[in-house]
Length: 248
Length: 248
DNA sequence: CTAATAGTGTCTTTAAGACAGTATCAA
DNA sequence: TTGATACTGTCTTAAAGACACTATTAG
Image 1 (cartoon, helix red, strand yellow):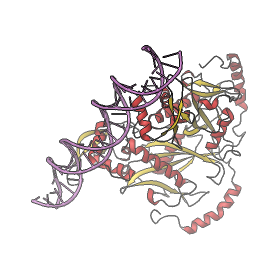
Image 2 (image 1 turned 135 degrees about the horizontal axis):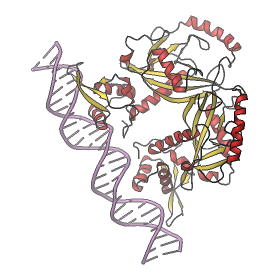
Image 3 (image 1 turned 120 degrees about the vertical axis):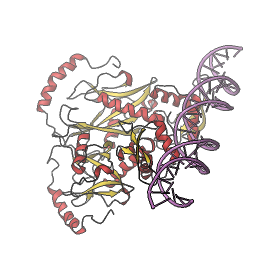
Image 4 (image 1 turned 45 degrees about the horizontal axis):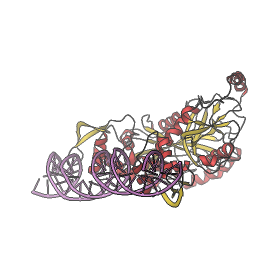
């Protein structure tokens, strides 16, 4: 406890007795609430560049315009915000396993023509190989981050926020591993890092960083892709938010 | 643009023509929206330890219990979420200048007895000297983070989230400078860092870190506090989110 | 003079950067 | 055997850690 002037127990018990009565008669529409949505930036590395999933809107507002996948929280089905995000991810890609992470919440009077609205933005990172032979929902497509068409609402800005967060975290975490299948070569992993950062990394330094930190484990299996077969590694992490002691 | 299969312009123009009609008849209460609130963890360093502001609730639910300052977004007065947060800060402390930063949004069906609710959490860092001779709103008090009483709703968890973020950012940013007045000695600054981190820092390393990064500037003014007068420094930053190349 | 606080010198350690070198293997 | 890709050795550099040292000033 902090100090001696906390609310007297007696008053508190009285208050609780009438709280039941208060809640019984409470209507959640006593005041105006903003529209609450969840939007997703679903990233994957395709054809050597950072792509994200966009969807052509079927309904008003912004009908027929490209937008980020997302939608309203379903108060009956979604027990929390992340559940809404994962449900949207599943509806659009059929995938349930992916790293998903909250970026930030943007709320203001101007972003949606229907009125004051608030969106909690998540990004998801998915392994491109998990997408093969799995059809996207109709109206959805992958688009290179650098070649995005005009997006509805403030979705271009939201995509930028998510990309900025991804880039930043790529500097000091193991997050990009979640963009690869369970077995990968260090060259593949390095390429993912370089694609996101938009700069090349010294090979020795990169491999030393990964192995010294112990975030990868040799599997003894090999992959023949180029001229020489390469060792396959697996992540040792349960959670990709591992942080390296320094940034690249 | 991404690919050639973007929505045809013709359809888009058609859609926009009817969008006005859609919005004219749109009612934001076509579906149920969660309750949307903003909560604040207002930090300051008082008596050598990290404190935060808590308020005794005057209304149901959780009447007479301690809670974080916060409240509903006012769709008429607040142009965006940060405005709501700053308004709450001003209402509770009288202060308008402070570093304020979004932490994260927590939304689920269980956290508020009134139903599915969603809160966007901010933390504010304020200079303790700015508080002197400025009365708090009634029912509010400063409480050491380590001696918090039971808080209403999930506010103890929210306070923990904010503290964790503050501690984390203290490792690699200049954020704690916002807990001091414009002129301060390096020893004072170091003490702030040590209080938040809960560990002592080597003096030479600390001073070198600050001066080498150029985040502080000698003012030529001195302060007599202990046995020997100490140089007063000022921040060179417009924005305290400056990041050092490595963590402490 | 003494004690306490402010502030410095300098060696070590850690992990990244640079870059040249060796290893393996398909064609 | 050539050339491309995988992988290593090792020197340099940047910045933190350790810790002993000097400087200043009130009492």
